[in-house]
Image 1 (cartoon, rainbow, N blue to C red):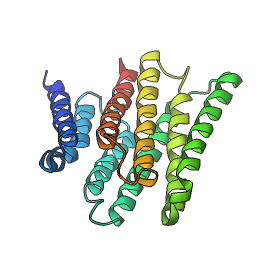
Image 2 (image 1 turned 90 degrees about the vertical axis):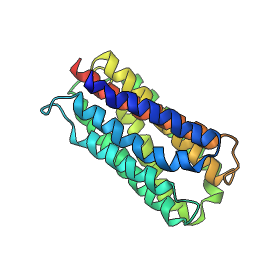
Image 3 (image 1 turned 135 degrees about the vertical axis):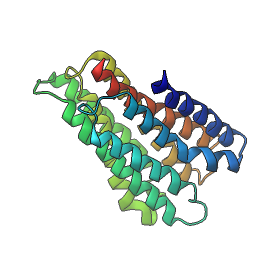
Length: 223
């Protein structure tokens, strides 16, 4: 029962944080957003054995926490956007490492590989084309980050047949929701200039659910 306390706190914190986004309540946002990833990390720690604990998952959640915190101050200084982007870049790469380690030497169907690669290349390409004219000084950072996001989605998909179905489905759903959340960040900042309706609510909802499914899918390897 104690192991689930952190999960309950995570869900409660998520609700309060998203409520802050809905009602534009800075107090709720600033108090509860930085608590999301630490609570998810504690839930992960208490629900996995020491031998099975993945350092890359821990790294991803720690740097996600840093990204969440930096982005709280993005409207005060653009530097915080780059710091947030850098933190989430490390988190994405950490997920790439752990997803890749989950793979066994099993040959995936060539059609499946081609489908996944085409989907993510097309997805990231369309997004980049939509915002490229407005990137200016952010061109290189966004290219690097978008590449990492696409790689994260690809490596999540390539766990297929290497892990149990529950773990594969949950991690892939989580990774894809993370990608979509980042998509809305890019569209809101570089295409709609912060005026995309309900962007923050959509971004945080997808991000929270995505992170939860990634962690839950990782734990499902032990089920």
